[in-house]
Image (cartoon, rainbow, N blue to C red; front, side, top):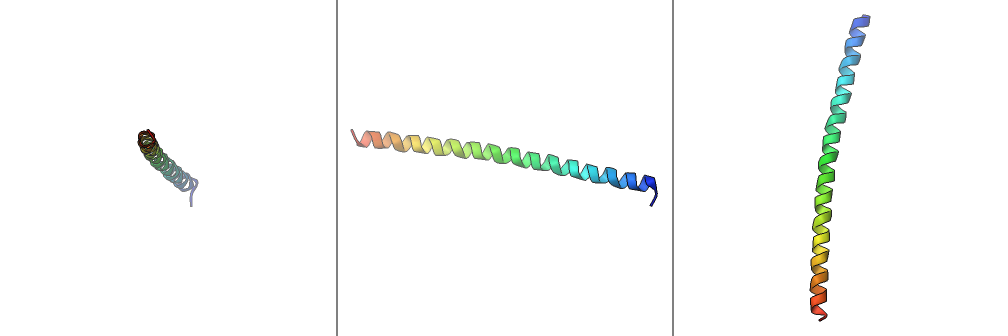
Length: 58
């Protein structure tokens, strides 16, 4: 293997690593968005239950 072959292989490996990092970052961003939406749905549901409980105790 020549020095140029080694450099080519290293460059290719770095590109694969960078692509994997970008892909995972996108996956994590999507998961954070889904988590925030779910958290809001749960908060809304609890607020609705609290409102019903308050009405029922009147």
